[in-house]
Image (cartoon, rainbow, N blue to C red):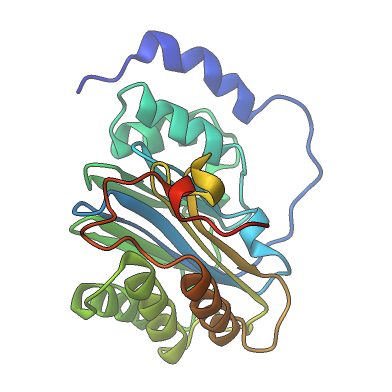
Length: 252
C-alpha cells in the first residue's frame, strides 16, 4: 500500500516540537512481533532503567507495534503507529521518523506491521554493542549489549519456540539475557500484546499489558506475573474465538 505522505508529513513536527529535557542513555533489548493466525501484535523489552514499560512499547491492534529505545524518542510510538495506519510500510515509517529527528543517530527503533512486515534502525551514535536483526514477522534490537550474540539469541529463540505470542516473546527475552543481555545489568521489563476486542471487558485492545518496573530479576518476575494474568484471563479456545471479551471478563 502506498504511504499517504501528504497526510503524514505535517505530523512529523510532533517529533521536534517543544524542548524536552534530556533523557538518560540506557541499555535496552526488545522484540516486536506479530502472530498472523491470532492477529496478536506485541512488544517485549528489558532495560537497565526503572519503568521501561512506560517508554519503549507501543502497539495498536490491526495496525502494528513500535519499540523506541536508546535515548528513546517516545513520540516515535504514537507517530509511528499513525504512519502505519495511514499506509506507510515499516521501512517508510522509520525513514520519515529519523529524517525528522535531529537526534536520530542516537535513537533505536523496531517496527512491525500487522501483516508481518518489519524494520529496525540503529543510529550510528548508539553505544556499543548496538544493532538489530529482522525475521519473518519480527524485529529484535538492542543497545549497550554484551554483544551481537544477544540479538541473535533472541531471534533464534523466537523462531524456535512454539505456542502463544506471549510465550515466544518471553522466550526471546530469556535468550537475550542468557547471552549476556544489557552489559550494565537488569532493572525492569515489560510485555504488551494487543488483540482486537480482548482488552479488559472487551472495551480496548490491551490483551496483555504487564510491567515490572523495578526488580533484581525483572524477566523472571515478568514471566511470573504473566502466568498469573494468563490464569485470570486465559486465551480463547476455538469455540470461544467468535465471542467478545466482555462475555468472559472477570469483575474488577
